[in-house]
Length: 266
Image 1 (cartoon, rainbow, N blue to C red):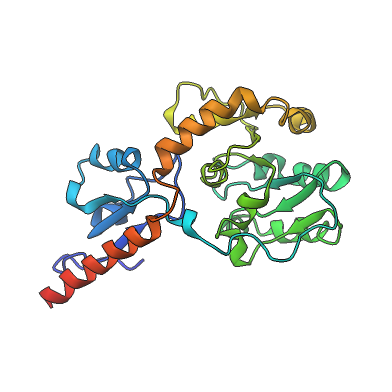
Image 2: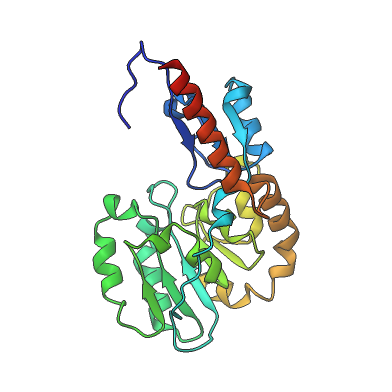
């Protein structure tokens, strides 16, 4: 985004592609926006606590919940095995990819219990260009679907299709949990995370700190899901606000309101 000129009033609308306990809420671009659209009152409160003007922070509900083209019309796999989605984050200090990425891909490629979607954050390839080669090695397997470029990576298609989410700190897990399902988190750094609000999402599933335990965690994820389901429901209700529909309309109305106000100033 270009730097704003100090003598021009900010007239852009900031909206988020996702939501989670690790959002970069102190980014100066957020503070410069004429309006910041967030999904929930909880998320709105995190901005107000940073001193941002209340009239510029608007809770609309989760916009992506209104997407109607999320699921692929064409089945990704020839059978009905449960689907594991591995979606590592792009930032190295938050991601399982640098330490375990290749191992996870090999593990999922070599097993036959699950179908697999490998769809890491789009920006991961910028930081780790070897991702393309690693995924290319397994992309021809019938039980593995790899995607690094299509719109399905961001429209909720894969989080909607998956039966088990395997990841680390990506906000996609909150989107996935609009419909509570099993989750396994990967923590190669073995963090002391329980009292850190940034890792609140990790209450939604088992956290694996030893790579040798990944397969076992996946195997028991469905059986143990009832243990984590209450936390999943609480997390998504607080983070996403209204997911029953209408969020996209409310967001669009807010954008039009900003445009109308800006036009009046011109």
